[in-house]
Image 1 (cartoon, helix red, strand yellow):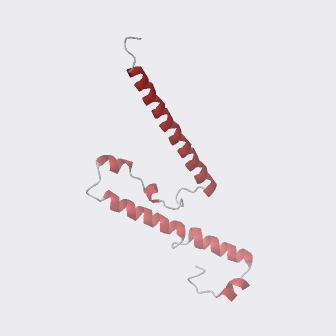
Image 2: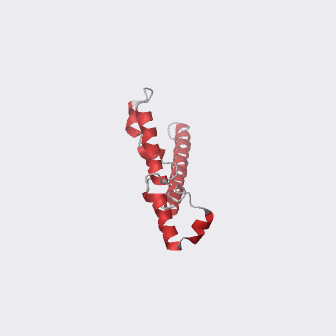
Image 3: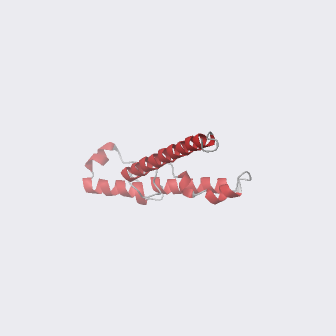
Length: 118
């Protein structure tokens, strides 16, 4: 809204700081052309295109979500810190799973080599 009205830099400097913050909040969150609304439109459009694709398997259709297209984390209503913590936790879980899988494969290989308990 602020940029669409064409306010000059001088007019922006003359705005009351509280009014400026309120306009920025409106512009970013509430306005129909704000970043969050645009992200919702984009995610739904991409999801619709994916679901109407003839090359998608049934399992792919079941696992596809609109949130898969949330490129900037705007739809999850989480802070950047929360998103970062979740990413770190997922990475640690993946490392733990891969380590456990490697340990199991080593264990199976060691047990395979034993003959008659000797």
